[in-house]
Image (cartoon, rainbow, N blue to C red; front, top):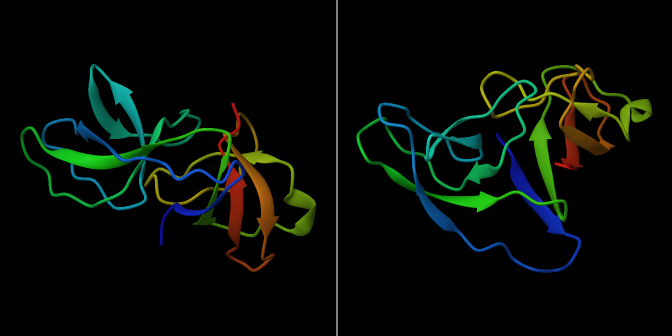
Length: 130
């Protein structure tokens, strides 16, 4: 599992953009991405992601993939590497190094938790609030 869209607060659907990956870098559906030197690359940790991959692709040269640009209106569901209890709702956590999960680390977090199932490991919902 990875970052999956749940709902949009404004009811709009997000259009896909087709952008180039960094050469020799593979990508997985639902992975967080950022733009570096005009190409997409993995966003993790305390990076502020700009896009979510809407397809998987093998590493190559000039690989173009569909992405959704992140905004404050879209809620995402994602697995967590550990447990986030109900008291974690309203906190911001970091992105795991794989770009497909969040962590329980709140220092310099970028993903705002709006809901958790409380399991260990948890599945959470939230927003990329800037």
